[in-house]
Image (cartoon, rainbow, N blue to C red; front, side):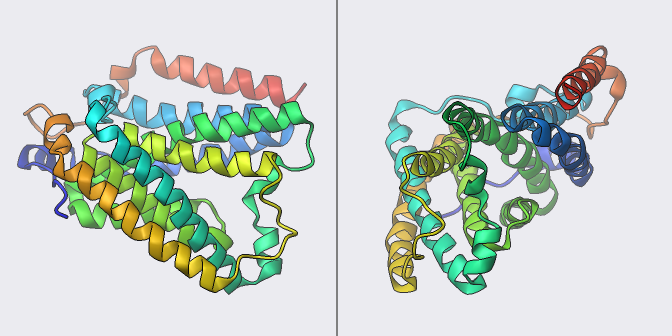
Length: 304
């Protein structure tokens, strides 16, 4: 399957745009201010970090570059004929990640797996709080992370290094930033899946849907008592069988999206011109509204 590469005009204009700096700023704010708000109130902290850092920073960066955020981030709605394949890729990707996660946990051992169990944020809390957290990780986490990684970071890296290198690098950083060695293989596969959905469709929306399906089904399994870290882990052979079935199904679905020609019709083009330059004056009052929101919400939550 051949994925579309950046055009010569795109390479000329945005290859020099800030990439790792944007990622670093978002991470530093998320792991410092965002972590403090999460400790004070987890559901609010999830919304705080995802909207004000992971979503707002790449969005404002595109504005500061003099480009349109909706077009640059590929926030166009796919056509109806691709939706069955998008949903199939998302569902198959869920089982693929589950199989890889079980293998990963078998490799690191039960103690490490329990220590890094990311679903524990949903356990032993009042139901209303569990529901608020589940909605946050299902709706807001995909929005923030996909806009940052597959909307902004992947596009700049594709213009700089090419499609394959950009996919691999973006997926590796996505997996690493979760700081979870017990789920690294699954996170790496999901990063590749979301990146492939973005590239094969020419839109960020399929990646958002795939991410929401992954997080939503995981949260539902915890709330319904289906997923329990105290139960015996899945047998490695069963996990391998799951991966062997889910991986081809995922690939077939992504291939069908690519063959539909959706990428050529949906992929937003970068207007011709000189290489972009980052200018804060283009943000005008936006940056002060953003700073005020960070300060006001953070202070209200942490000190109340």
